Length: 214
Image (cartoon, rainbow, N blue to C red; front, side, top):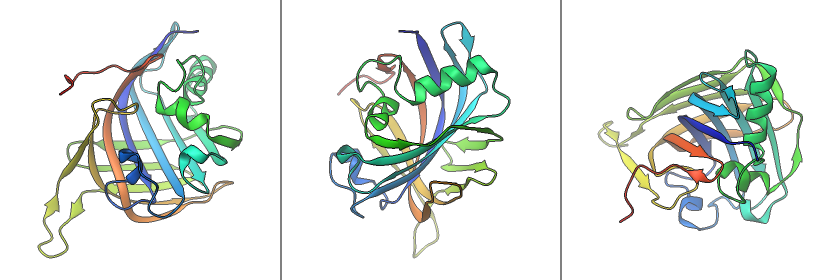
């Protein structure tokens, strides 16, 4: 197993209402799960290959709850990534070189039955976790914009967090709203639904935790 570590920021948008039932071991509120994700890798490595500054994205579609499988997905790596970086990132994203089910990459990969060929292209990602603002743009494939949830009466920004001390993706996520449109083989349309903005830090064995368990 090649040792790896990844630290960065993510923006994820899915079809659930704010809160996302999956975070609480419940079924998706639409009966299915469609999701779009982008991660800005601030620091990391795969073996001796540095991953600092790379960017990855993905589109997922599950016809039912994620754990029931039959998912479809496509992965993206920024075109500037060197061949060794591309290989390392794709191995991480597909759950390889990872303890069983230790990361969300490994969990999701185990539920995908139709994985399209990866695309190496331009990826623009902006993620401000505290402000709950962000954008993921992959030409011809992804246009996603994230923003704070707004009070329908006052127009004021509404702030909420999800804390998962034993989570396999993050320990704390700021919750906002996002809209996504995708092109290519995996088509997704999401309007003002759940968005999570989170700091990520993980390796082969899962999350590297900074918060003490309650």
